[in-house]
Amino acid sequence: MSASRYGGFGQVGSLPQSFSRNDVQTTTQAGDIVLYSGNQLVIFFGSNSWSYTKLGHIKGLSADELAVLLDKERAVIGLQIKSE
Image (cartoon, rainbow, N blue to C red; front, side, top):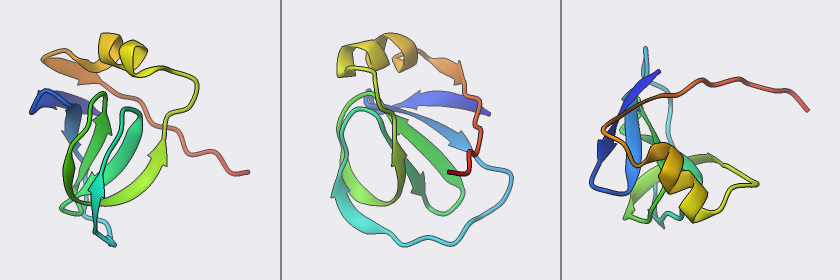
């Protein structure tokens, strides 16, 4: 997925279809992965307050490490679904 920096706090990429959502007013933290408007994926390297559907969180990287990876004009993000 191709994504673009948005608002100085995250990378946003359009998904190929819309998904059902359960938006809740949230203050995000670095590492949070959310669905926005049902058709956009956001990965945060900073913080923001808005209504999102939380999908997950990146573990094992600090906010500074996430910023190094994601605080760029554009990013390519690969997703893999893992069953537990």
